[in-house]
Image (cartoon, rainbow, N blue to C red):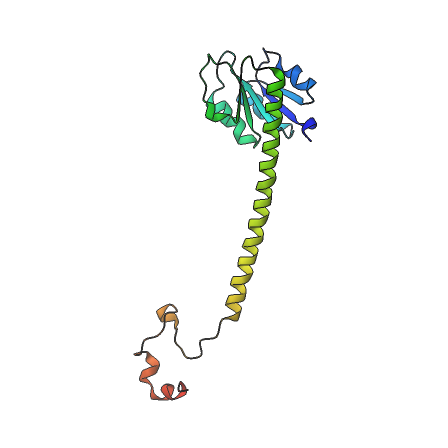
Length: 182
């Protein structure tokens, strides 16, 4: 599954990482470093396993990252220049310059595997949650259908289902009082 992983690389590849990714078995699509470029890449309906950015000259803008984030649940990786400021919280993986290719390729693989594991767990939790909601709904329906009828007039619409007081209207009518004796 990981050998078929597809990477979206946003921006230029001035450090020539795309050939390394391809040689390592990844399929790579490159997009312009713009909101439109990212939207165009996702319009192709390719399920990206990871989205990579670089900040060799400047950091990707938070709005650009936000645009990409709105289009995918894939993890984000940044090839970071330590001399360029960036918000590390925007990325699941940060790979600093001069990291050996075999190390960052393995880090990409691990990040993709973890994302797959989390998505699988999330699907299972959603299925379990749906099953629990269905069970709860069935139990509520059964409780409502098994509820004893109000034979003695202890609850009335006027008091919103609360137990009627000793001074209820039926107590004032002697004929009704006779009917309710045990």
